[in-house]
Length: 129
Image 1 (cartoon, rainbow, N blue to C red):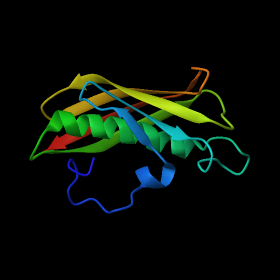
Image 2 (image 1 turned 60 degrees about the vertical axis):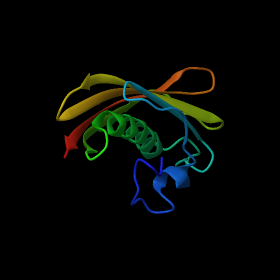
Image 3 (image 1 turned 60 degrees about the horizontal axis):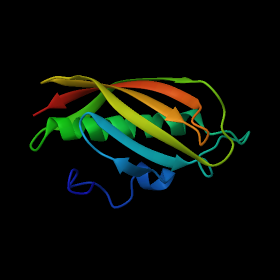
Image 4 (image 1 turned 120 degrees about the vertical axis):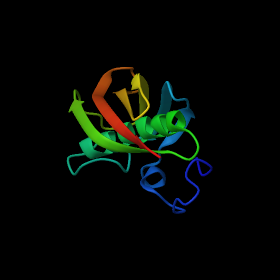
């Protein structure tokens, strides 16, 4: 990851939320995140945490697509939350919808440990030179 973002700070939101990558490519990037520490006051996984996981996975995939000397930046994120999660780990998979010269779009599905859909998101990234 650090090689993709050479000027990145030592600690990012990825570190703070405990996001781990399990697969990285332009077409599909996957990862997981603990629920513990990423909840809202009622004890459920925070919707913002799901959004950060979704944007992180898709942004990394878009950066791989962009390649060296170019940068992918998120320009539109939407997320629909389907069910609450109180414990365990959630897994996200960002799958490419469109890989173009100036934009890349991804659908991100976040699931709980029982493989139930928790959140569906979509991210569009602009690719700049």
